[in-house]
Amino acid sequence: MKKYVRGTAIVGVLTLAVAACGSKPTESSSGGSANKDFKACMVSDSGGFDDKSFNQTSYKGLQDAVKAKGLTEVKAESKSDNDYPTNMTAMVNAKCNVIVAVGFKLEDATDKSATANPNIKFAIVDSAPAKPIANLKPLLFNTAQAAFQAGYLAAGMTKSGKVGTFGGIKIPPVTIYMDGFAEGVRYYNNQKGKNVQVLGWDDAKQTGLFTNDFEDKAKGQNSART
Image (cartoon, rainbow, N blue to C red; front, side, top):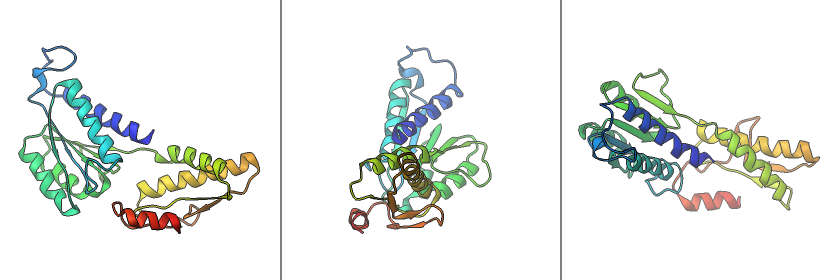
């Protein structure tokens, strides 16, 4: 559900941006050349567009919008955190009409770029500026809701009476999800009279297990075994 909502939100942002710019399309509703001058652009975080997570689903949303509205797609895949300012500048130089930054790690580069380019529409996944920026739309999601269901399901399936969760980096988008997971387990226990334990996260103390990385698979495997 989380991934689907993210992709849908990207399509929604691009559709609204197209509606707010230019004249009414003269082609059919399926798109066409009328919108080809509208450049819909996206910058990934260091996970890349094939991360099987929010970069990939966000990019799918961009592709769907491009196909549905007959837009021109421009994208920049970041290989490291150092690429964010360069890639945002590249999108501005490409004369993009809307630029979607995928992930909180692009927050600083996106805020600066949006502030410096008020005539371009921006959006960012999983982040919001400390002070609202008129041309920057935050795309935030209540991930605790999906995690609650995961926690409840895990508690119902465990044979050991223990379930586990761990995070990448200790930031709100991650800990909110872990909170929801723990809450789902707690609700299961209350409803079923059980005592399933959550390993890897204490939502009361806000402490737990983190790899401090989103890309190292070995760290993830080791954490899962802990």
